[in-house]
Image (cartoon, rainbow, N blue to C red; front, side):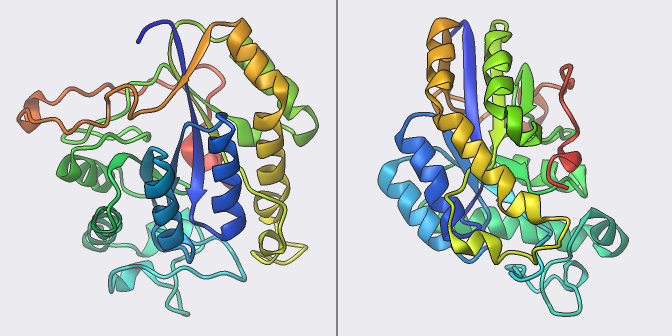
Length: 284
C-alpha cells in the first residue's frame, strides 16, 4: 500500500464497558481501525471475546499504572514493587519510577501479552498506558513476542515505522472535529496514526473518579468528544477527498512475526513529527 495511509488507534480497550463498547461503535462504523487492550482492567476478558468475534486488530496496552480513584486495577503477577498500599497498581509515572524494579516490570508486561495470547488473541502491536517507565523493558517484551511498539524502544525491540503520531484526545473539545479535519487535510504521503480514546456516555465513566478529580476530563469529556469527532461525517468525507486510506498495523502486514535473527530485525528510530507530544504527556 502506498499514498496517504492512516491508522486510527483506540486506546484503553477493556477499561470498562463504556470504553469497550464505544470503541466497537467506532470500529463498526469504520472510523476506528485498531485498538489495544488493558489486561488488568475488569472488562478485558469480555473485550477480547468481542475482538475475536468481530476481528478488530488488537494490540496490548501495556499497563503498569491505574490512575483512577474509584476503580483499582491489580497486576497480573505478584510484582510487589508495582503495588500501592491497597495492592493495586500505582497511580502515576512518578510513583512507578520511584518504586518499580526492572524484574517486576518485565514479568508483568510479559504476563499481560501472554495472557492475551492465551485467550486467543493475535497481538498486532504493543503500546504503553500513560507512559513508558522503562524503555528497555518494553523493548524486551517487543522482542520476545515479535511485535513492534508504538513507543520508541531500543534494540532488540522494534518500533512501528510511523511517519507521524497525532493525539486526537489532546485537542480542545470545542474544536476537536475541526482540528481532526485540518489534520487529515494536511497529511502528506506516508503512514500516519491518530490516537484516540472513544467511549459511550454511560454512568460507569463518571464512576471512575470523583467529580472534582483532575482526571475527570479523561474519564468523561475527552472520551465522549473523541468518539463524536470520529463519527462526524466530516471525518470520512475529508479522508475520501484527501485520498487518505484508513488502515491498521495488521492490514499493513507489520503484525507478522519476524523470523530473522534479532540483530537483523528491521526497526525504525522514532523521530517525533512536528506537533507530536511525548506519550507520557498524552494521558495526564
